[in-house]
Image (cartoon, rainbow, N blue to C red; front, top):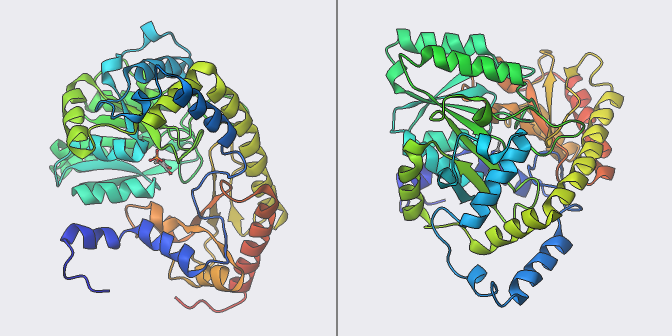
Length: 430
Ligand SMILES: Cc1ncc(COP(=O)(O)O)c(C=O)c1O
């Protein structure tokens, strides 16, 4: 395709991983996709949203205003309600929160929040610490802003504190510490590994940042996209609530996963020093997110319709997650060839192959065999690593139980196991 009339940024965007992944979906349309990060069709709340939209549009006091532009930070009533919602999730009262409503912004998805807040903090060349692996769209966002990404090792629970400390020491030794601006963590049922940072680990991370505070102030950007999608027990309080430093944590949470990505509404909370900068950047970006989506969300939070929906959703995803995991167990893959953990929330299972020569990358034989011969698709682990030379990048894959109906999950795993066995029986062509 002719590229000469495009800006460098557009050409760069065309080379990003998300585009490649979407293209695979187009190239292999008959594939059963365990790759897509879409949510479950069956539980999307069409009736609930239709009734709420009717109420709003039939109410003379609101039927016009919800269709009007809103304000840059979003509806004050919604943002006030979001403070209460977060207080409930964190098990505190609104008075115990160490932020105010003026620090809360409604955004068009948390993707918009992540992008704008990073622009508010980072110049090109600044450093962002990310987990290895991490949410890949944000990795591209960071590259687009011109940030240097420094990956930090994870264990089953998430980021390792010793590795974080070592990474900071290495950056100090290299004279790069003044450029370190943000530590980005998907702190609940993360994308891609499904891990959740427990309260003790959260406190250790904050202690580590405290120890470095004299030398360098680092924002902790907490992405709580999957926080409410827990299966059996609610996860620990947020970094936002745990941190005694009111200036450090930047928090974002989306309603895409637990209500509807079609409404594309999320919120973010920024420390006082970033409020004006965030508002300025958002105002030149879109001067406010869709008012109608915000009004629907507010109504659902007020009536409790949202809470009932999320309770149902937890059960639905629990069943789907465990169906996929049991299918993995039944496939025999977990008896020596690969490892995975039963999901406890969120939308993903992270499968790691043992190092037997089979690699998972887009250009590797397994991906082609799976898509072409077995009609199943996964997301190669390589998408999630800032450092593509990390050996885990080509041994891992993300499997999603979000969009496929329960009945197809076992078929997907049978096909994947078939592809792995087929490739295991062949000499590897790289
Ligand atoms: C970890 C994480 N953060 C943010 C997002 C963005 O979600 P949205 O922009 O729809 O709110 C996603 C979407 O998959 C995600 O997985």
